[in-house]
Length: 122
Image (cartoon, rainbow, N blue to C red; front, side, top):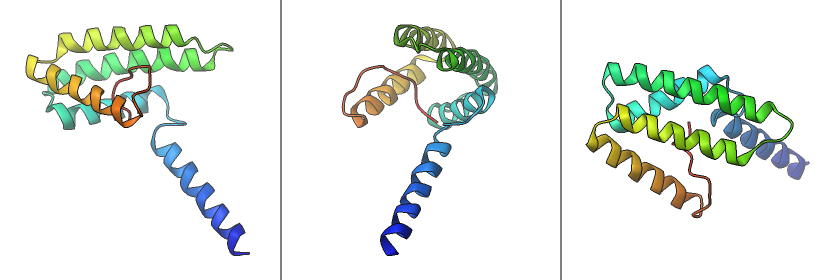
């Protein structure tokens, strides 16, 4: 009985964590979450927040399309992230760009140095 209860509890915690990370989030929710995270970490101005939201929404919609397609193309996902980072750098100040690069490096290191270079997750 205890083992079953523990298994159910662990499954619930795992599902809750997945949902909080944006597992079932709409593109709009993903864009809001990413804008909020970048605003908190990079101290974005109101104008920057609007531009970052628009950029994030465009990317979130593209990523949703790729996820929904039958063959998730990792190259297209990587290209989408590179485009996002290029466009984001045009919005950020030099100081914010440096901090963003540090955030990306920290994120990659926390994932065990693994591959695909995404922006900060929500």
